[in-house]
Length: 107
Length: 354
Image (cartoon, rainbow over all chains, first blue to last red; front, top):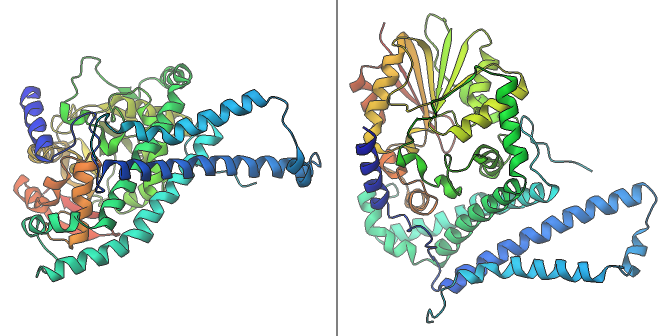
């Protein structure tokens, strides 16, 4: 029963034309366009995550009377290395979709 | 500040994950509710210019598809839809995997706290058809012990907030046909996934013994943990819908919610026959699934084929073209009725003769 089941299901999967494992289809005229559009979506997600957290933080700081909004404008962070590392991580995550392009693929 | 409320489910691991899911929900909302109607208009115009009727069958759409796929709007929409799914799953899965031991421990702890409600045979062989990365979820429903956690939060994006309190599952349970004699002692939810309909069934019918059946153990373990945390008494069993380990004539009502469009066509008949077997005479079946009429506007075909091919629902096309009500009749059911309850699902109701 299971053997037949497996065989038929595989056949049906192939008929449905699924991309092969590890293959990412492109819908736009060039794969680069697909990757760039995905990068924009990723960027939007990262942007919202940060905005959401900042809103929560500023709201808490203000409600507890700890920090006035104008102090944030002029603050310099002590651990600049950690800050730099966070920026590097952000850029890596943002541009990672471009890595899905195959080396040597021609325009 | 308002906090997201996942209702009957836990929060995702980090605030960042919740924010990301919220963002992805908006991306999907934009693509589905705002952008798709415009695309449907454009696709409809392409179809009309090609001399096609407003509603067409699969063969007619096949002739039209190359033209439609050349539309930049269609191409961009497909990219956004696929990337949204992939990115949402990836972030959730990475987040849960970072503390895998803790989340697996929660499942085990629930099994120790509430034994005798999760039934499975460690030697059970999962068919390959159930091992696809359904909806692009990496590892699908069977390939990752944490699939249930990831599935719930990922489907929050799909349901656009309609499942935080299991709202859509509750409405499905309310739409079920029950036996005419009113006797409801045992109910079965086939393809129960993480048990949202099963717990809703128990809440609606507290006197009944409720069983949820699924092929995927990770989903069942999450379902069991969730029901345990909710204090709702449901049995969850791993098994195949076409060969259930349940006695003949043992259920008063059976529900199959969005099961059939995810299983291969050759299993439709054995599943229906086994449902007929386990229902008692006078028992009622409710199948809630995608429409299966083989006649849709071109834009709906475009979306259906996208789902089949690029959202990893490989068997959904076959279900869409299948006359499911006729199969129920051939299996011996009577009083078969179709009811459309919303824009994307069709209810098919049937009764086993007394």
